[in-house]
Length: 122
Image (cartoon, rainbow, N blue to C red; front, side):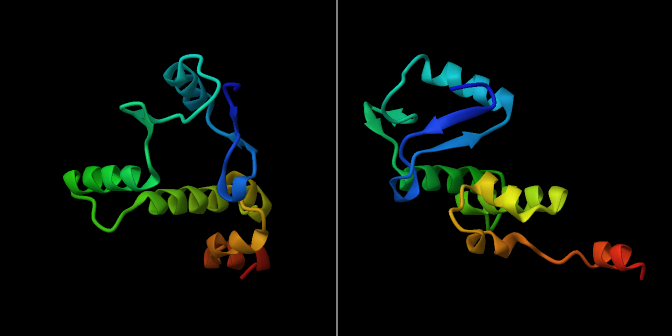
């Protein structure tokens, strides 16, 4: 693991991949795993923390903060929308999300009317 990336051995469809992440997050993650090189990142009572458990915890935190209508997936969607909005680059957004097909990424490509007008000189 390096400060700006980490290797994920098991992801969706069992594809190993390298994830790019902010350097400060990489440093914190390295400290969190404290030298472990194998097994799950998040454990509780010696067992892997399930996806469903993480979803429930996030839902609880959103509720406590009076944030309605948000979920773990909505955080991913916000991340993708921000990356695409800042770059306008669909392939970069695809890579950031780890999508195998750009077709899965197209939903984040929303037309920016102001940008369109500027480009065509309207």
